[in-house]
Image (cartoon, rainbow, N blue to C red; front, side, top):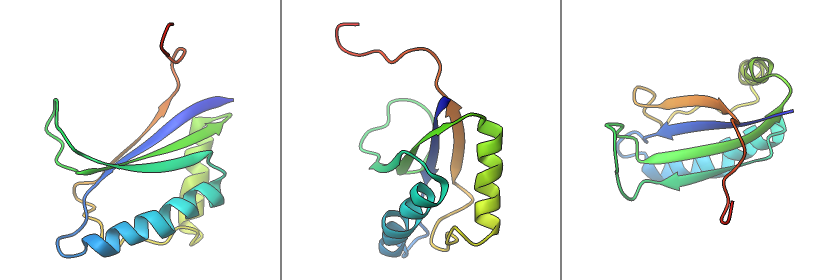
Length: 112
């Protein structure tokens, strides 16, 4: 079974920040984790830029295990189309970046 990370870099619409965070933390993450059988998800806020030009201040990382990444993405699309995902109405979709990554190699831990 492949271990994957789905990442989302996001920005709320101006003046909608509180609603955005409430939707993301209390609706979106639980819907995806529980509705799609993800292992977990967590959000992060940018505190320092090191390289690159992306302007999104928020990151979400979703932990996924599946036999086929493409089939999982299809399942996610079906889930969204079925109404399983509450639409993002407070997110700047023009700046949003999402991508799926599959584990490559072993994790490097202290002492390895």
